[in-house]
Amino acid sequence: MNLYDLLSDNASLNVTINAGQLIEAIDYCIDKTREEPGHQDTDVENGTCLSAGQAAQLLDVNTGTLRRWNKSGYLCPVSTVGRRRYRVSDIKKILRMSP
Image (cartoon, rainbow, N blue to C red; front, side, top):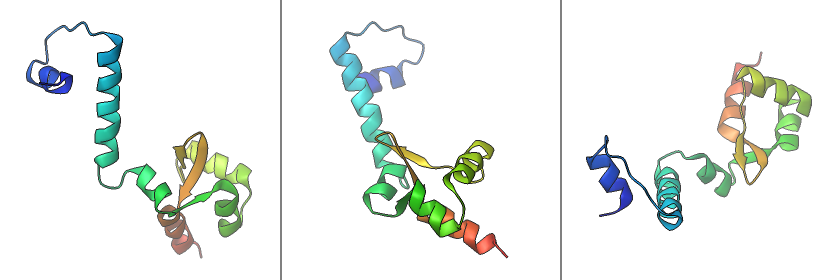
C-alpha cells in the first residue's frame, strides 16, 4: 500500500514520514495532476501555447496589457519552467469576442 492509499483510507490518521516518503508522495501528486485531462503542461507540450510576446502580437497589445489582464483574470497564462505561456484556445476566445 502506498502513502496516498493509506491516507485516503484513514483521513484522520496522524502520520510521520521520512524525506524519501515525502518525495514519493509529491511525485505521486505531480504524476496524478499530469494525467488529468486538459492539464496545462499538455497544452505547452503540444505547441498550443504562445509566449507572452507572441500572444501580445497576435492580440495587438503590449506585454504590459497581458500582465494587467492576468491580474484581472481576463487572460491568465500557464506557467511552465518559470515561463508564462498563453493558451491559443484562450486567445481565440478573446479574438472572437472582439468587434
